Image (cartoon, rainbow, N blue to C red; front, side):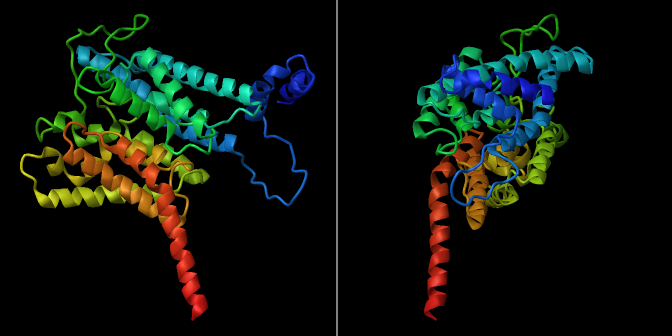
Length: 388
């Protein structure tokens, strides 16, 4: 590492004011601060610095996403081989999934970071680090058959209109990754829903199997609309060996990521716990109502938590520190409403069985209002104590 540090120090003058590569100062600064903790100090005032900066926080989240990513790659291959009715080794299945998912990761980062680099150069500011996480989230929340050009358009739209126009990282109102998914869902619904987008059909470099264009495979949530019986059991739904978005199927892999986030202190357990509590309470309410003909309402409350994007949203999306509630009491309210709203949308809107995305985006809007009333309530209580 010392050799790398010395090399960066040697070439750094070229990127500083007056250097021949000054135009790319933001790019150099972005790479340098990603590799090494900045050693800059405050010139005035009293400041308390944490031992970890925002880039390191983002790195922890990316590490926490690795179990879901790796399992998602295997599941992509597993679903392809199972659909073809043939046997395959772990290496063959994982290799197929790796080659199917890798282009989506590359497109997400190339388009998103490319725009971030351009904006940073244009504004003569540091490159913001928020897209380190968004770039990894995006491939995990889309179907494996989502076309790359559609993914590129969605990434460009979300980075520009859901992030940069608000001022960049830390200023965005909505979760950028979910805006990308919402853009895809409403602009290209056939690529994001139905029974044909969840299993990779074409073989890659001799791996996997070519499946006919007429092949279909519904997700568990998609099957709820047609009847109460799901082809996949609860065990498969927890392990994740079911059709679905690349990184959202395995409760176990997502749980490992949750442990990493909680251990590192990056995510709030209050928000995470409250999302599940809200889903359980609303699931029990609908179970008690016994809505005739509504199979989603009849589904056991615990099954709402393990299918679709509920777990993934609770762990990685709802806990986004920028767009979620920031007061301690507000985190309970914010998370509970997300879990409850997700189940409500699933049950009452059969045309859209996955309600997690809309629930989080809706609560992103109300997070500042929740914090405002929590703070105001504390102010009122202290004012009353002062009068007494």
